Length: 278
Image 1 (cartoon, rainbow, N blue to C red):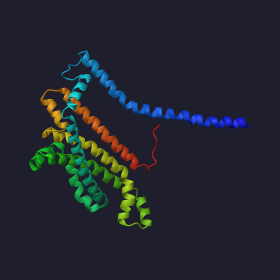
Image 2 (image 1 turned 30 degrees about the vertical axis):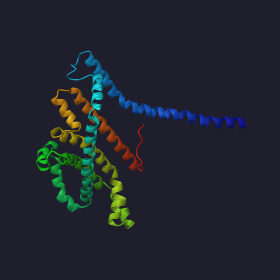
Image 3 (image 1 turned 90 degrees about the vertical axis):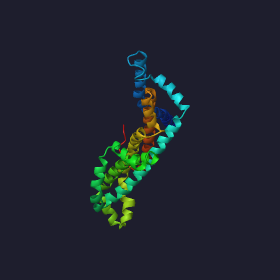
Image 4 (image 1 turned 180 degrees about the vertical axis):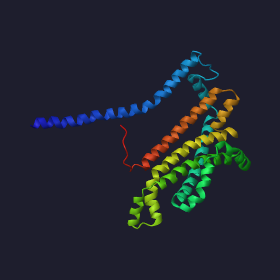
């Protein structure tokens, strides 16, 4: 009997030890799956260009793009990346910050919604390029016009999602707050904003993604630095390698910032009991 218990006790830790590497391996494999399509596209592009199915002046091979990237990195590439990133985050914080203020005001006040919502809905429909001539006339070609355009792009996703999230708060939660006799601002702080936080964070995440798009619109018109300037310079000098490198940089930077926002979202919403993906 003792030998039977001893064998059972020793077998349990062994199964646990064997499960740890497998779970880590599954996580690693799941992350590597996201690289399958980009790697296949790179290999396919390299084969098509080297076998002259596609002309190199139209689509450079990935190997030549790497050489061009190394050449740019010895120049002002890092300055361009820093300039664009600074503009994006400056416009994002200004636009999304104002959006949160107006959205909370509109979401909690019916009178404010009746006054402001029609105007915001109309302004939201204006394309980004339509703002550029007016901003250049008002603010010139300096940083103010670029950051303002990015702030406009960041404003509306946060505003729309926040208003919708506040309107979607369960009425029963408000009734519970009234039962406990919470004051108006206590209800906002402890009930409404926490309940609406998933929608608010979704809006912030969308605003950050849209900020990168508006940044390109701003830098393509009037800029001497930035990734948008690289795109314009590559087009004017007939350098498709520079254009493609700038596009890849935008994709990588956008993915990094979106991943940061996703981690922040998971951390702030760790209290939620959501469905686990299998």
